[in-house]
Length: 486
Length: 97
Image 1 (tube, rainbow over the protein chains, first blue to last red):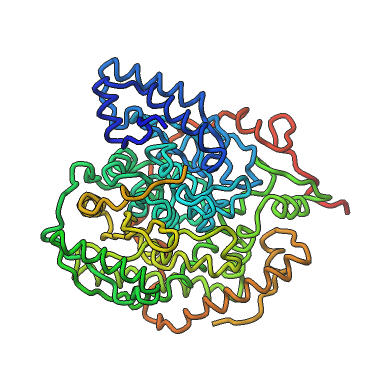
Image 2: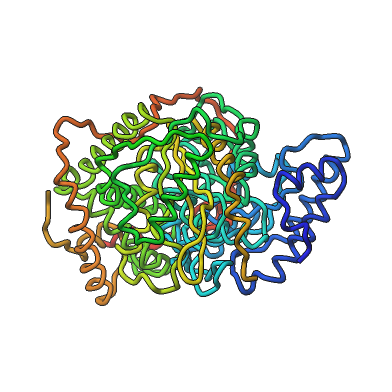
């Protein structure tokens, strides 16, 4: 392995900007790494060698012309539910298997404008619905730390690509934990900004009131660089937030003095077993050791998160995925009349998990059940926002597990609800729209596998969140103690 | 809160998804199980709580009504499963009398 591929995005930017190395050299090294390992790992559904080389040349020309590019030469994995004009964009679904995006998502465009190099389109659970990447209809992605295990999901391809040095930054999308959980499973940083901070224009919609794009990176500093490049209002997304973005990369800190960090009483980790309980207790002590004051906070609604989420997200998905009807793009299966054509197209094009969620969402929105399920869940959602507001009166940040276990083996969660349980600790923050991230915090199990600590902040306080995560990462350096198997 | 057994065939009809007999049985059981789990929400006292569709205080978002760039028609139509000239072609929608 060429050591260039191990460099952080920040190091690459420094070196490319100072012309100590070219974007082309970085790109060739990473493409060689992809060729070396990706047949085994399956991070990418589509490799973009030609596109990457073109962009590298373009970046080198801009740097030579004296331009200052905040992501000059940084190899980028793009989750395959984000559009990149002229490339296949599948959402890991048969219904979009051969669809070529006619435009580029705002978040992706901002990364490219900042000098990032698109290496490939990364695998995901179909339409981002899942927590293991096993719901992809187009490929299997393996965890770089143990190839018998899943990388997490739904942004598993981006997480695994970054962990395995097939990219320095991976774009993911998080609806109920889809950046944070694969981040934890793959020993990388996974950061979901505040809902609306990063434009969703060009992100294939799953649950529009929850979906948020964010980065997966090997360092917190790199997450801040990606965030600074992507965040900000976009007129093409009417839900994107029109307020100034506080730069995160210049807010990184080395201690936690003066910060109160809330530990959620209801997130008692003893039920996760003695080893994981001890691991999270140690992580909290590490926060305290950096000067943070730990305070107990309450989240009385914690146990209702899954129920709330698994009504709201499927309801929105059933509505969003109605557009896949075989008329304008994607798969069509013929039928005797237009109704049969819809039904056969959707039967052949969607996988089991997508069908399940469309069905539950359709049911929750159907006449007679709407108030009992959908409206009830929306009221519960209000309670989550209220509970967090109250909790943040007593603390600046909240610390919690990112996942209840390390990465599990393929096919080990056969019943859908046991898979849904993986999102127990990440869903509450999603329902409240909060910025939250997962940062490596040690290893558990046999073999020892990576675990993630989740930190969450009040709305719009990404800079404070990343600043604190940086202090934790710098002091503990947990990720550096692991070794990938490829 | 409703706890009726879910009529999967009816819901699949609403959702425009053809199901096999095996799927009807499998999804019926799985969705029934999920509904049992989500029924815990009935424990929450929400009579005084307003429903929220989004949690980041957005209000009405407006923009001026001006034409902007849009996708090229040929690009869009080139991705259609079936087209006829400048139109998407679909099976017959209106039945013969």
